[in-house]
Image (cartoon, rainbow over all chains, first blue to last red):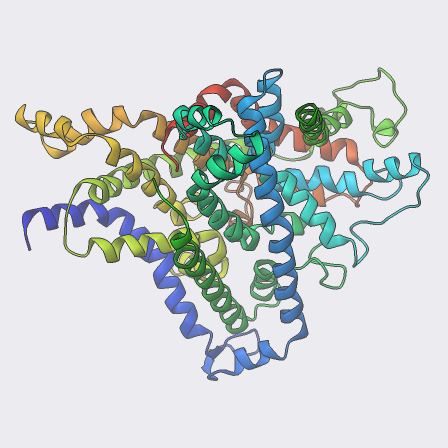
Length: 289
Length: 267
């Protein structure tokens, strides 16, 4: 091994240690534990093969949670990305109130989800919450947003879009700054309309940003669960429950470690598949300049 | 015409976006019996804040959060700088495989491995410690990638010149790369600080004592100690207290924050 090799590995070593300790080793250990029965009833874990996975397949709650997570991702990812792009285009060009507009869109990012949950709980409260007041003013009836199975997921999706769009806006703003003015100049020389410019110049050149934002957004749709602790605890009847929150409950409320491990493995595999699809599937369609 | 319409709708969107914050503030300063009332009046009070401050050890929570956030940031900056330099400027055996391994952490961040990492921390006897809250985040793939991109744009001639002057590699990193990558460091620092200031689930699981609990967990416990909907004035006051430091910092450094983010080469 050459001297550079040793140097490079030494430089990477500190990061590598933590990466192994808190990503690779735990995942491997969890994979092993997922084949064991390890709950309050079994003081010493014992091997049961695929039984945890089998039980999971027959568990209605698991399927419900998985479906919820899918709807949550479909509800939050495209909408918040589209909004973020619109916000960035506007915040980039706006003449009046630039500071206010950017601040308004971005500040939810620096507010903890747990604080957001407190305020939005208040917004969604029946009778004296903001939305109820608005509905009353419009002469409509009451909706118990968080207590109703049909509405609770919508309520969560709207709140998360509000929280996330401004964060993604920043990446789009950065992307927009990287597009050279010459591109727009030559487009305007050709007499292109704004919509054509967006479709032919801005949007294609922002594709790498879009891919990056999408990977973050998809990962976030599995990661964001803090609000459930305050707002719904996954209810009513698991209507707002998500995969990570279900793992949290299984591990730390029911202390079923074998099952929690199996669920964690399913989530890791899911995330890696999604990432692989995004990188290898979509990356080919993107033109990097 | 179309442009005016879209501009107007964006301004309306901005107002909608700001509403939850303003409403939360407003309620936090209202007398308790007025908290849920929509009638307008000029009655304001600081009672709610006094009550919150007396009702939970928020000073300790602030201190804990501050220690956790700075601890994570300092270690991250060191580990990320070293790794980013290696990935950006060196050719070595196993580079591509290692890079892929680091990529995996972007997809499977520590936040998702709540339960496995709890077990690791238990094995290390670090449950209910500040170090335990910090450790899973000491290596940041996000930071490494961000810095790697920036280091790559720094011309190799600068390094060569420094080497001619007799600088060792760490002097080169410290005197050439770090100063030139300053915007990226600022951007990453702000992202890291706001992320860990706001982190909740992991510290919730790991801590169970006041000495180690951060603000977010303290706030959640405080908010949940009330019957739902009964004491909005106190809950919004506590929420305001937790939000304020970061929000003020953001408003003060907004320009640097947005600029550094935009110039840090995220493409």
